[in-house]
Image (tube, rainbow, N blue to C red; front, side, top):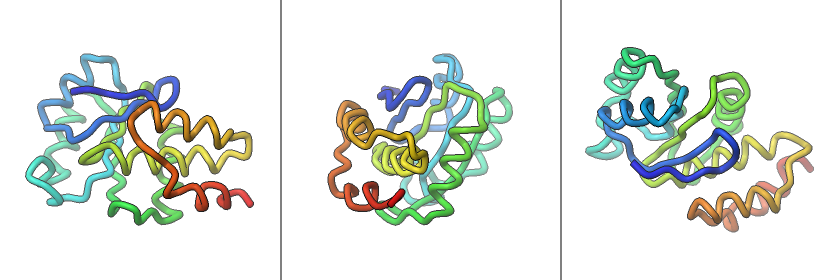
Length: 142
Protein backbone atom coordinates (compact mmCIF):
# COMPACT_ATOMS: atom_id res chain seq x y z
CA UNK A 1 0.00 0.00 0.00
CA UNK A 2 1.51 3.27 -1.15
CA UNK A 3 0.03 6.53 0.08
CA UNK A 4 0.45 10.12 -1.04
CA UNK A 5 -0.06 13.12 1.26
CA UNK A 6 -2.54 15.84 0.37
CA UNK A 7 -2.13 17.81 3.60
CA UNK A 8 -0.95 17.19 7.14
CA UNK A 9 -2.68 14.04 8.38
CA UNK A 10 -4.62 13.37 5.15
CA UNK A 11 -3.32 10.92 2.55
CA UNK A 12 -4.75 9.09 -0.44
CA UNK A 13 -4.17 5.71 -1.96
CA UNK A 14 -5.58 3.48 -4.66
CA UNK A 15 -7.67 0.36 -4.15
CA UNK A 16 -7.38 -1.26 -0.74
CA UNK A 17 -8.13 -4.85 0.02
CA UNK A 18 -9.79 -5.77 3.28
CA UNK A 19 -6.41 -7.01 4.54
CA UNK A 20 -4.83 -3.65 3.64
CA UNK A 21 -6.92 -2.10 6.41
CA UNK A 22 -4.60 -3.78 8.92
CA UNK A 23 -1.62 -2.19 7.19
CA UNK A 24 -3.36 1.20 7.29
CA UNK A 25 -3.92 0.75 11.02
CA UNK A 26 -0.27 -0.28 11.50
CA UNK A 27 0.84 2.88 9.65
CA UNK A 28 -1.09 4.93 12.20
CA UNK A 29 -4.21 5.88 10.28
CA UNK A 30 -7.28 6.32 12.48
CA UNK A 31 -9.92 6.93 9.80
CA UNK A 32 -10.46 5.48 6.33
CA UNK A 33 -12.72 7.22 3.79
CA UNK A 34 -13.82 5.06 0.87
CA UNK A 35 -15.11 6.62 -2.36
CA UNK A 36 -15.69 3.34 -4.24
CA UNK A 37 -19.13 2.22 -5.31
CA UNK A 38 -19.91 -1.35 -4.21
CA UNK A 39 -19.27 -3.80 -7.00
CA UNK A 40 -17.39 -1.33 -9.19
CA UNK A 41 -14.40 -3.65 -9.34
CA UNK A 42 -13.22 -7.04 -8.19
CA UNK A 43 -11.20 -5.28 -5.48
CA UNK A 44 -14.32 -3.71 -3.96
CA UNK A 45 -17.19 -6.18 -4.18
CA UNK A 46 -19.03 -5.11 -1.01
CA UNK A 47 -18.65 -2.31 1.49
CA UNK A 48 -19.95 -4.35 4.44
CA UNK A 49 -16.84 -6.53 4.75
CA UNK A 50 -14.66 -3.41 4.86
CA UNK A 51 -16.88 -1.72 7.44
CA UNK A 52 -16.79 -4.81 9.67
CA UNK A 53 -13.02 -5.25 9.35
CA UNK A 54 -12.45 -1.57 10.18
CA UNK A 55 -14.65 -1.88 13.26
CA UNK A 56 -12.87 -5.07 14.33
CA UNK A 57 -9.45 -3.40 14.27
CA UNK A 58 -10.49 -0.01 15.64
CA UNK A 59 -10.52 2.13 12.50
CA UNK A 60 -13.19 4.72 11.81
CA UNK A 61 -14.84 3.93 8.46
CA UNK A 62 -16.69 6.36 6.21
CA UNK A 63 -18.24 5.34 2.91
CA UNK A 64 -19.00 8.12 0.42
CA UNK A 65 -19.51 6.24 -2.87
CA UNK A 66 -19.23 8.42 -5.97
CA UNK A 67 -19.11 7.96 -9.72
CA UNK A 68 -15.90 9.34 -11.23
CA UNK A 69 -16.38 13.01 -12.10
CA UNK A 70 -19.88 13.17 -10.62
CA UNK A 71 -19.63 14.84 -7.21
CA UNK A 72 -22.80 16.20 -5.64
CA UNK A 73 -22.88 18.89 -2.99
CA UNK A 74 -23.95 16.17 -0.54
CA UNK A 75 -20.84 14.12 -1.42
CA UNK A 76 -18.57 17.14 -0.93
CA UNK A 77 -20.30 18.07 2.33
CA UNK A 78 -19.95 14.51 3.65
CA UNK A 79 -16.24 14.48 2.80
CA UNK A 80 -15.75 17.92 4.39
CA UNK A 81 -17.55 16.75 7.54
CA UNK A 82 -15.36 13.65 7.74
CA UNK A 83 -12.23 15.81 7.42
CA UNK A 84 -13.49 18.10 10.16
CA UNK A 85 -14.92 15.60 12.65
CA UNK A 86 -13.09 12.29 12.40
CA UNK A 87 -9.80 11.36 14.04
CA UNK A 88 -6.63 11.90 12.08
CA UNK A 89 -4.56 10.78 10.33
CA UNK A 90 -7.07 10.03 7.58
CA UNK A 91 -6.57 7.76 4.59
CA UNK A 92 -8.95 8.25 1.64
CA UNK A 93 -9.15 5.83 -1.26
CA UNK A 94 -10.91 4.83 -4.44
CA UNK A 95 -9.82 2.66 -7.36
CA UNK A 96 -6.99 5.03 -8.39
CA UNK A 97 -7.06 7.79 -5.76
CA UNK A 98 -8.46 10.32 -8.22
CA UNK A 99 -11.99 10.61 -6.79
CA UNK A 100 -10.61 10.85 -3.27
CA UNK A 101 -8.33 13.69 -4.41
CA UNK A 102 -11.16 15.51 -6.19
CA UNK A 103 -13.50 15.25 -3.19
CA UNK A 104 -10.72 16.44 -0.89
CA UNK A 105 -10.13 19.48 -3.11
CA UNK A 106 -13.83 20.39 -3.26
CA UNK A 107 -14.21 19.85 0.48
CA UNK A 108 -11.20 22.03 1.25
CA UNK A 109 -12.46 24.69 -1.17
CA UNK A 110 -15.60 25.04 0.98
CA UNK A 111 -13.38 26.95 3.40
CA UNK A 112 -13.06 30.58 2.30
CA UNK A 113 -9.48 30.61 3.64
CA UNK A 114 -8.49 27.93 1.12
CA UNK A 115 -5.68 28.77 -1.29
CA UNK A 116 -6.57 27.32 -4.68
CA UNK A 117 -2.92 27.25 -5.81
CA UNK A 118 -2.06 25.13 -2.76
CA UNK A 119 -4.82 22.65 -3.65
CA UNK A 120 -3.52 22.29 -7.19
CA UNK A 121 0.06 21.92 -5.96
CA UNK A 122 -0.83 19.28 -3.35
CA UNK A 123 -2.90 17.28 -5.84
CA UNK A 124 -0.12 17.44 -8.44
CA UNK A 125 2.47 16.29 -5.89
CA UNK A 126 0.18 13.32 -5.15
CA UNK A 127 0.01 12.49 -8.87
CA UNK A 128 -3.32 14.05 -9.83
CA UNK A 129 -4.16 17.04 -12.01
CA UNK A 130 -7.12 19.18 -10.92
CA UNK A 131 -7.13 21.29 -14.10
CA UNK A 132 -10.34 19.73 -15.43
CA UNK A 133 -12.01 20.89 -12.20
CA UNK A 134 -10.54 24.40 -12.15
CA UNK A 135 -13.79 26.18 -13.08
CA UNK A 136 -15.82 24.28 -10.49
CA UNK A 137 -13.22 24.90 -7.80
CA UNK A 138 -12.84 28.58 -8.69
CA UNK A 139 -16.61 29.14 -8.68
CA UNK A 140 -17.33 27.12 -5.55
CA UNK A 141 -17.04 30.14 -3.23
CA UNK A 142 -18.01 32.79 -5.78
